Image (cartoon, rainbow over all chains, first blue to last red):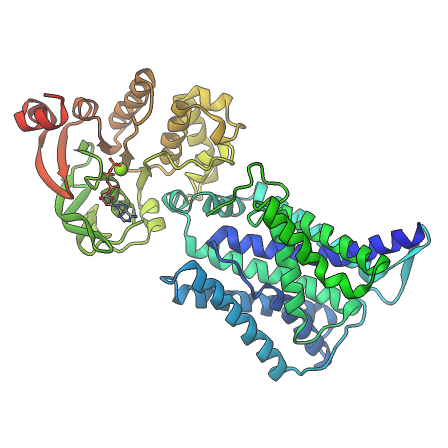
Length: 289
Length: 235
Ligand SMILES: Nc1ncnc2c1ncn2[C@@H]1O[C@H](COP(=O)(O)OP(=O)(O)OP(=O)(O)O)[C@@H](O)[C@H]1O
Ligand SMILES: [Mg+2]
């Protein structure tokens, strides 16, 4: 029982990070129809920039904000690249994001290094004990921050003018333009928002799992699986998708073998693509585009 | 003159959708554009709103050239469109749809007043304001589309086949609203396949065939014109 509970907590913690990455996929996809395969590299960038800012003697809070801001800028840069080739097909834009991911990995290797790095936990090394299972303060923080971000995004999409404009763009870009919504502004916003959210995940996860220039590959793919599971155009579906993946992974790693852990996300994703291509929450199995 | 179009040509790849098209609209007028399927009517309206970039030619609005102005700036300047098929945001509420119509405006108080004004024009929309736009009947959706276009306080209102697929009673109601709007000073450019309806409710009209204006004149005169009668008014 305690064991199961411990696995669940581990799964939830990682699952929330997958959820954040997955939401980034959906936010960009909704605004532009682009699947951004550099999403995982934004997680990596957040963690790595944070590591090196702290090493450079910058205090925690400014470093935090700077790491998020710089990663958001990397998002804007990606938008700029897609904008420069805006007459290309959707497929070539997706390949462009793959190229950008490789570029970011290479840049991280050159600018930083190839070592594994970690960060001091924000709230110290302490932990809670719940039903006999331990939960570190840092894991708790990952969950709390993720819940806050999800709630914030919910508020943004449901209650604010700009959030509704983003929904309008995803539903009917031409009609949105007739409202005077600038697609360009919405695209810039979606790329920077997706990058910023991912960077928060990266910064919070690093004290738990460590980071290096390559961590984005797996995190990006897991986040993509989360988005597919929840439906590529449904940010809140991606949250459910991320949590499901995280928990399944933790259970497989706990009860079978951690060797199979990474396969879980892809098995689930393939099952979804076969049986419910619009995601778990689609009504008719169809999706945008 | 509120709108002046000169020698406008629009291509989709190799397809020539509009060729050397010229027309003008004076302030306070209702001008109709009639034409068959595929004549290029929607293309013209999309070009006027900035969704399509012309290959050549010039568009002037209130004496300023807007040929390459981005679509959002045109809405801001007072050009608003009710698109073909209405273009509602189906999974947003009626009220959210209407408010998105005021997206370019900042005068919050006035926006609220204009929203009430739309509800006064179309009382059923007030009842349905929390409903998803996609759940409304065709007629109610057209009211949302018109109301939403009005929320930007247009000087020039472009309508793309507002009668399409609607019952005659509803069409009557929509066109009555258009007549009221004209009384209030809005200039209207009305695109219709239903030539009877268009000529009955306009001051002047243009006839579009294969991307070219082939006839122009007062709506009454065009209604009596033999070739117009033969082609568009069922003999
Ligand atoms: N996006 C597009 N790509 C290529 N060709 C197009 C596109 N949109 C329209 N066309 C072509 O341009 C021509 C004009 O089309 P348009 O939609 O403007 O006509 P219309 O008068 O509005 O017709 P309808 O009465 O059916 O609405 C048609 O031959 C159409 O096939
Ligand atoms: Mg048309």
